[in-house]
Picture 1 (cartoon, rainbow, N blue to C red):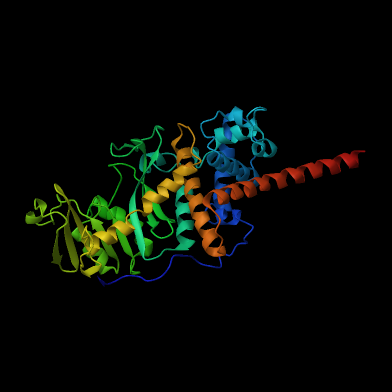
Picture 2 (picture 1 turned 135 degrees about the vertical axis):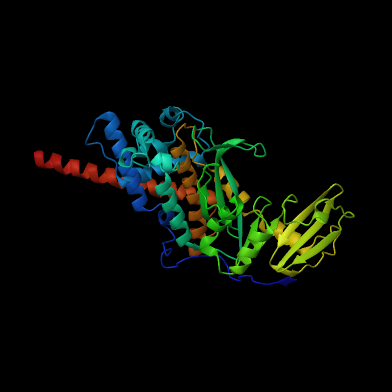
Length: 419
């Protein structure tokens, strides 16, 4: 094996002091990324919308209520109750006690109806300049908190996520290669070892403003890995991103690349584009610090992998005779795919035509994953993803319970005084 320019450290929560929460307080892990300033922002926007629509100037929403509302969304995802009408969750026949005891159906529906993540009237004309502005504040804060809360390991995977929704917005994507076909596309960077979501942003379509001196794929990669550049980490990507030019740029910044290559790229030699080798045979080419591996995995299909991390490439001795670069790519390519599967398994997502709400559901799903990873690695706990979400939902609900208890105690004191 001839590897160079590789970081050798394990992924850990960072800084440790920030993530030093109690083993019993799992909701504190949730609060690292969806923190109180973010909740206060959502509450302010929601109150503004409700007062505007209902003409009720005293309508208010507390942090405890918002946390309880989020807790109910998490529980709905874990229980697989997203497709049920809300009335069923509070009905005498089908209800879950968790719902009935902590928030009335009408209050839940009211919050769900008016929840907003931006005040439209505050900055007229912003939508023409930034199509993501209706939810960009909370998304950017979530990503910022995620970056500051965790230090990734050696390998980072970059790929796309198609978040299933048919909500009407100017950047809904159709992708025939995806099972869901329609959705909102996010570009994500994920730690390979832990599956922690490190960075991400939404794809706003072809009219998105980018610097003209870079290709789209380069702009996406450089933006996603910017917090981790110059650290010796490796970035694994697919053939949409990989190019010799990008590999050389990242190499100069102390960052390595391993990725499949589209044979139609101009920087691929003409002799390689249509070359076919004997089955399980390989061909290695070197250019500066980059190594191109051509592997004939099938009779009519070969694979091209570009790497700037392998100074030399060894060939496996088993039946497949996989080159080292192919094996390395296979072992580090799945970070985003697994994180997306984890997010879908207990997704808070439910039917809605409001795309900002759909993005909020995606934030909650990602926070469920990141909170689980932070909690496990900080406390040494072996708790499952399911159990953590259930416990977080319970503890978020308790915030509302404490608020209601205080109100009842206050009412009882008033009653005693009146007597």
